[in-house]
Length: 502
Length: 81
Image (cartoon, rainbow over all chains, first blue to last red; front, side, top):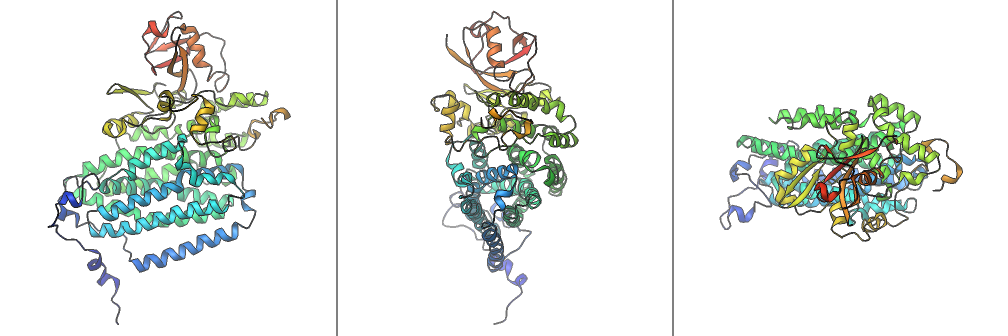
């Protein structure tokens, strides 16, 4: 039987659109699951993915990718490569798995929603592959750490994290619920696939893959490089969705969806990717600073795509550029100081050589952020490491759920005031770390108002006793699981022996 | 006397912290209660008295949470006068 070239049958087989007669449009595509934003059904049928693939091609490609990743893992898992990695890199990998693995399964639920409620057959076809992709990513990123549990018990958090109320996980869940688990298909195509995957996952996956290879972690490098090849394909669901909205005169809808999620994604990446690149990756293995990666992947490449689709930079662009100088330094400091509240062992990453590098990449770092580490280092050297540990909690933002670090921005000369943004809504007080976080909340107060931050939960009596041990128990962290200094305070310089085991 | 939660900022520190103060404590003690979580831990101590700034104004040292009209989770700054 002769085989037709793909170009002669692809469009026919994937364009299975039809007019509804037995049910209404809203019954087949309820707005809460698929918001058309007023674009007529037939206009969606122009949706055309830029990257074509058939199911047989997909299966062939994916089988090859899986064979590569699992065989690398099979070989390296029998080696002692993990034990030889630097503590900082190990921290970055353990943090990554906890923050990402189960979220990948959740992204699969989001893709499945687009596979059912996407407004064109071509889109539903692409999203079906996306569902399979994300399932694969969830499997890979739980399987690989599971295989290494004997070497590193903290890998348990690859699966455990999202089943706890650990503060960073609350922040990630709040973001991902907004982005895909509780989102409609059209908004998701712009917020998950375009904004998050085209923009930011490049940063974590390509940037960290480059650092992984240099750090000698070939297992992790192979894993996340393989994942990114899938992301690059299914992320392209955003582009045709924006085009349909723009053609229908709804570019403002796309812009608003993008603006809201771009800021939210920035905050989480400033936390996770920020400390991984600028503090946890061993100095000799760093390819670029976090800010340089942001400049390249976001400020240049991604913004060019905005323009290609007729969109503009978000209104808060200057505030983003401002935050790139200081926010992730503050988050890293906070994670280190509140290290019992995380599932990995943070390293300070502020030895003399690292500080020199930080000063070069972020002029003024020693005067602005180095001064905090000076005080903490002195406490360690004086035999008081307990002074580098918390007795209270940071206030967290009611939008991004991350610590409110406005005082750091003010002290470093980037903000005009150390004060957070405080808003009263229906009798309740909400605190925000930035104007865009406040704006995100105010765009959809009915969506966010009911959520309690970890601090709200403490003040509402959910956490008993309302102190650090009570909070650690609430977050699912047993004493053995709580983070400790990953280098046993080596960064602080000569330490009296008595403090070494404190 | 009742425990009273405020958002505390110590001058020079990097983060807003949850500080529990007493509603009838004078502001001189409230400043110390906020600064306790920052000074000597991340912020170098200074040999100057600490005062409380609320909504842009320095509060008298003998004012209390009640007399100053501070509401739960209002933002108080502990600043060097």
